[in-house]
Image (tube, rainbow over all chains, first blue to last red; front, side, top):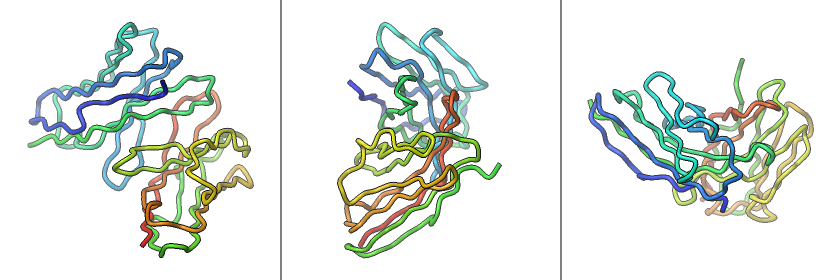
Length: 113
Length: 113
């Protein structure tokens, strides 16, 4: 019940295209859903996050869509750029757990020029 | 702000040797997390501390692994004896109470021969 399932495992997109990464969770007690971006040789860094009281959050070219009833959330990257090429992790946590994050498996995004 | 500092950045050792990984969290952060990242298992939480006290060590693989946080600015993760299957990237992350974002260090890439 603690798992977060992420897909696809890898994604190749042309510059200017839309990248979409999906995640599903089981634990209905999760109440905070961040996305982390990781470049080769670096640690993950918070990209954007959402709480289940809203269905969408947008920051620049990055949007999280959240479907509470389906227990799914997704990351959309509009106008994808080669500099967006990285590994993306979705995660979930229950605040009362002390922010123990459960991570998805990761998606390796490649944006071709 | 220097961010989370980890040392060494790379470690190559032989099976059976003791390995000590070090972490300095961001000043003022109350929680510290140790993660392990492998291709097979993704990002796994090993242990986390709050106010220098271990809160959840359920992710520690076995007794060969131990972690300490003697003060608010320093933590160690020790593997004794090390085994080839311990080869991975080990990340330290820190977080301030009442803030959800975890800040990751650059990681230590460990190779056990």
